[in-house]
Image 1: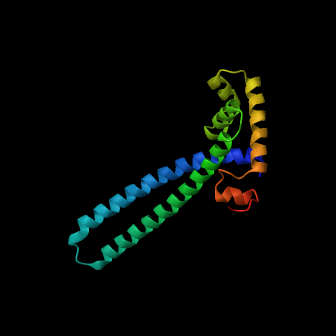
Image 2: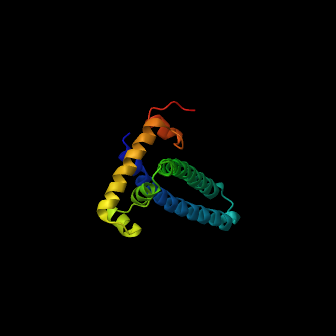
Image 3: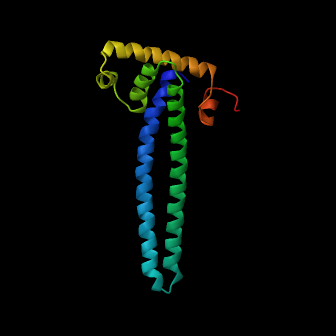
Length: 156
């Protein structure tokens, strides 16, 4: 995996994490609604409504578990990228890469944020990319197991 592809995973991870959190909120609201419905229908003698509610609760629980697992995965991806960025020697280059890939700013926005010229930010970006490349070639420290596999590294 190339260094830019690796760094771009942070943007994907950030977006997916936001989407998954929203989905989890909706599923938890749905679970709350189902539970309240079960309590209201407690006086019903037939087992059919309870069976349907039980199925619905199980379905929502399964969906929550899947989303939480996906959230954990994307959190690991984001952690991997942030760890790699934190591992480069040039702190300013790391800040540029963080703002660009983790926060999703354009290089022009990064320049404005840091108070440097666009040309200087592009130079720092290039230097940071080279440092990330060296880190990815020489080490898998800070990478989640999925990233280690994708880089062809032997798991520790």
